[in-house]
Each structure stands twice: as C-alpha cells, then as structure tokens.
Image (cartoon, rainbow over the protein chains, first blue to last red):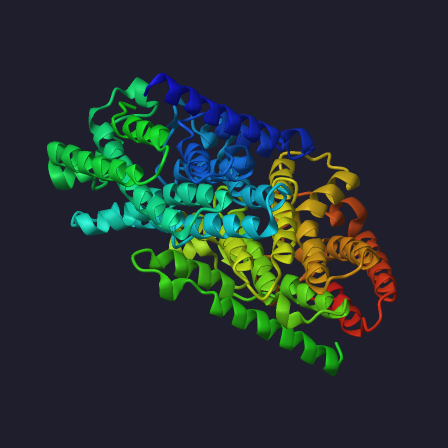
Length: 296
Length: 296
C-alpha cells in the first residue's frame, strides 16, 4: 500500500475503533458487567477491520462522507465479531485462539461467550436505529441490509452449511462457492452496499459495488484457505492446518495450491477492473491488492 | 377469561402464528435448510404468545389497529424464542425439554441450535425494517425499542446475572428484582411499548403502559417461581423443581410460598388499577388475571 492509502486506511480504522469505544456498554452495565467485558474483549482483539473500512471507503467513493456512516461501520464489525465468538465455541469450530489471544469462551467461559455473541448480534440494530444523524429511511435500509445478510439466508446460513459439510468428502466447487458466498461473502457485500446507501449512491453504483464485493469476498476466502496451508502461525494469530484437521474441504483441496492461487489472482484482476469504473478509486484498489496478497 | 376475551385472545394468537408462518425462511433456504427447520420447530413449539398478544392489545388499546403491528408482534416472539433456545443449551440451563418437547439442541444438535438462535436474534430486525406498511420513523422506533431491551442492558444482561447468581447463596430481594426486570421484564415492557409506538400513543399512555408492564413482568416471574414448586409437570411442559436443582434463588426462597403468593397478588392488583386509567381495557384486565392465576 502506498503512503496515501496507508494514511486513509489508518484513518478509517481509527475512526471505527473510536466509534466502537464510544458505543461500549461496559460503563453502563451494573451486575451484568461481565458480558460487556467479554463484548469489549472480542471487539478490541483487533483484526483488519476490513468490513468497516469498506463501509467508509464506499461511502466516500460514492460521494458521501465516511464520518456519517460510522454507526453502520461499527455495527457491521459487531456482527462480524459476534460470528467469530460463536464460531469458536466448543460445539462449533472449537478454537482456543483467536487473533493470537484466548478466544472469548476460553477467557470468559462458554455461557458468557454465548451471551456476549448474542448481545453483539442485536446491539448493531440499536446502534444504527439510534443514529439521528441519518434519516430514518436510511437507517431502515441499513438495518435491512445488515440483518438480511447476517441471518439464515446469509452469514449464519453459510456457517451451518460449513458445519454440515465437515461430514462430507464430495463437496463440489459450486457448493463451496455457495457456502463461502453466504458465510463470508454476504457481509463483505453488505459492507460495500451500506457505504453506498449512506452516500445515496445510484443504482448503477450499487450494482458495481455488489459485483466488486462478490469477487473480493470469494478471493478473500480462497486466500484464507491458502494461508491455512502456507502461513506462519504467529503472523496469522491462529493455528494453521486447522481446515484439514477439521476435514474441511477448501479451494486448495479442489484446485490445488497453484490452482487456488491462480483463481485468487483472476478474481483480484476482475475486482480491480470493476473499481476502474469508479472515479477516485485509488484507495480501494490499493486495499484490494493489500487484502489479496496478504501473508496473514 | 370471559368468552369475549377468549375470542380476542385467540384472534391475536392466531394472527401472530399466521404471521410467523408467513415469515418462515425454510422455503427460501437451500443447502442451509436445517437452520430454518430448527427455527420453525422452536417457533411452532407454541407457548402462550404473551408478548405478541401484548403488542397487539396495547396497539388496539391506544387507538391503533393491531393488524398493522403484526411484524413487530412476530419479531418479539422470535426474540423470545431465540432466548429460550440459547437458555436451554448445555452450557446454559442445560434443559432437555421445552414446552413438553425436546429442546432445540436435543432435536437438531448443539451447533444448529446455537445458529438457529442466532438467526432468530437477527431476523426480527429484517422483518420490521422491511414492513412497508409502517412509516420509516415508526420502524426505527420499534427496532430501537426491541434491540435495546434484548441486549446487554436487557434480556441478555439478565440472563448473565441469572447464570452468575447460581454460584451465590446471598442474593437479596433487590438483586433478584433487578435480574428479573432485565431477564423477563424488559421484553414484556417492550411488547407493551411497541404496541403504543405503532398506535402513535401519547407520552402519558406510554408511561402508564410501562408502569403496567413492570408490575405484570415481575408478577409473572414470581408466579413462574411459584409454579416451579407447585405445578403439575405435565401441564407445565417442563420439569418442575429445576430452580432448586440448579441452586437458583427464587422469590419463594426469599419470601416463602405464601409471601410470594401475596406479592404476586399485590402486583396483580396494582396492574389492574393502572389498566383502569385506560378506556376499553377489559381484555387486558382479563389477560392480566389469566396470566397471574395460571397453573402452567
């Protein structure tokens, strides 16, 4: 990433992290403080904040002001964090580490982790609905977009397919693409669309944003599969090889390592072409390359 | 309940059950059908549908039309159902039975139950935000009310206190009242308030609705505690004595059985007095007595 893009990126990241702090419930909680601490713990564990960055970047790209979409940016990061907390549970992927730290249930116990995830699934809708700097029509659209991409037809649906696929060894590429399009793709698409909604983007802009997000989301997941095989465990912040340990079919299984890399490269190319159709998409192009050539 | 009230009640119940069926996601789900089935299973398990009945009853009471608030009525029942699914999980209350049937995780497995609960926590916000028969301003208010009463400052916060209290034997009446006011009280209050919001009720009406709901919610919980000691297991649809087995402090522990009954009766009296300040509150009075003198 060039210096200008690095600055924009760190501005977006810092804006959403400040917003998440502002929305922390812990100071307002009394007897139930532990659930607030577990929420904050997982929200503060970091990560790349890709989704809230995309929200802000698409808002700016489509002529809006990213500062006006911070509630939505924080909201989508909460949804993402809720999904990580629940995915790590013993009855799900049973992961002890997340981003190099003990996962939420390891730190706070299983019941508290279930409830912290639950609270982070619902709080985003309180946050957006109470953001009076956005017109009610906009708030309703943002909420609808976020809720529908999170639920059984979106991220949560993808997670159940992923769980059920573990018992199978005959998954096709099409099935894998469908699962990923829900589990990780939907929320990435929604991040881009929320930015568009807040900016009052044209239908054509929304259409392009969705096409871009589809390429990015799939490529991002393929890169994740590749990193699970090739990455340095310390850099990744979680154990590598977990997919094959859990008998998960990955793109590396289906296409081979080189085939997966080729597919990721093609999708990267296509997403950059789509961004060419926007003016001032320099930052998003840099971001796309950063996300798809990462080593962790 | 008199015949007129029974008819009104069954009209409200049947309206929300039809609405829940209409919103069923199962027909739209492909590979992830199991999560939809688990959602429907728990939604169809029945129960008294008290929260959606209160939404409709308060909408009618405040001069609105209950037919216009069915999305919100269905939404609050989804939230209630999500909380039951997660409360029954092995890491929470570990209940095998719910309403006389296997609990969701017993029927569909733990991972699927976690995800079905998650989906039912988020779907309500999709349902309300997409209800174009309500003005965007109203949708935003309904969503804000529902999300804030569900989260860490509401129902979910109450659940964590309840879990953490299990390890203590020095719970005071005030602490117990606070826990119940979150765990079960908040959603009952929100049911009444949502009805008011949809009807465009006055501030005075909303204030009275909240006062009524506080009495009703607490009394309802005390009655639950009493029934856990005295009820017929078959009628209750779940094992009795579970509170004392789990070392939960109840109002019966703190006040004795007679004291608890007296407190429930006083709260019933007070809630009926509040209803007297509304016109045409005949149905709600009957409902209040029905809820607080139930044997299951």
